[in-house]
Length: 393
View (cartoon, rainbow, N blue to C red):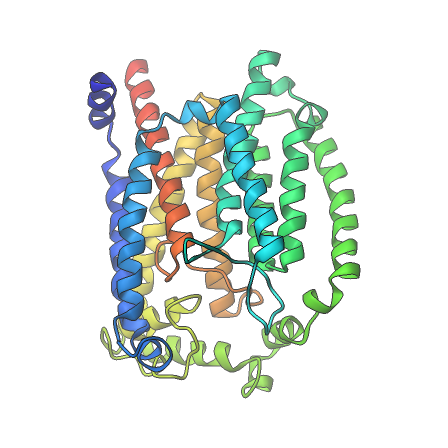
């Protein structure tokens, strides 16, 4: 064990670690600034309500990060580790469908209560699906001597698990999580290294199943998926100013916040839009407050920090010779990258608003806990990556 820790710290990825810590602390500051008025008006009457809760989240996240960082990533392909992860996923999904809750205006049912705290199973699903598909492909590749010879029907079981999770998330009508989980798994499959012919067959079958799944969701959950709130988001996307007093209210006030910030911003803590104009500014629309208070520089800092993590992940995935490390690193990078795009795309109006958090920055316990575990795992992959790279020199 002593030798393992010595090796770990000799190959410590300082860039990845300090970027992660900086983003978390930067997000904490912005949560305090953005959530002040909401805390006073709607929560316990104190301006630091969300700040205090996020501090607790970050303390727990630090412990989880350390666990992920020191647990050897090779063990994620272990049969018992995979079964434990699947059992946890099954419990969470059953719990969610039996005793879940969500937002009445959208008809979503995305949270459960665990020990008095809210927990969002779809956040766990994002990391689970990366590790489970990667572990399954890797184990199969060991039997076939090369991952290139793995065929879609050889890994039908993990793909079936993924589709069940997608179905469950779709039934929750958490469309943002549905899109991200779908794209994460596609990325891991692409990164697996299986032959192009097998990939074509896989995606042909997947497309057919996806069409059936979409039709089933539309048929059985029509009232939830196509309710007034979600249809309003599509209308807002095309012309938000036509619905400025209704479904376009949040988007327009987000635009006003971004526009008022300009190049330098109005100053930290000086936002006007957070004073009751922009709903829930500490969550999905926190980037609008960053743009208003810190201007283009603040936005560049956040995008640059997240970009470092994503590019570092992809660099490891592209250069490592270990297929398991490639799939895990690339999967985590894809998760963070896709989620950032969905959040910023919704805030800026590039895509319809789906309501997902901005990684490391937005307020949210489940999000920061799962992202921290993912970052810990990525740190462990990086340690082995750097160690193996030194051997080749």
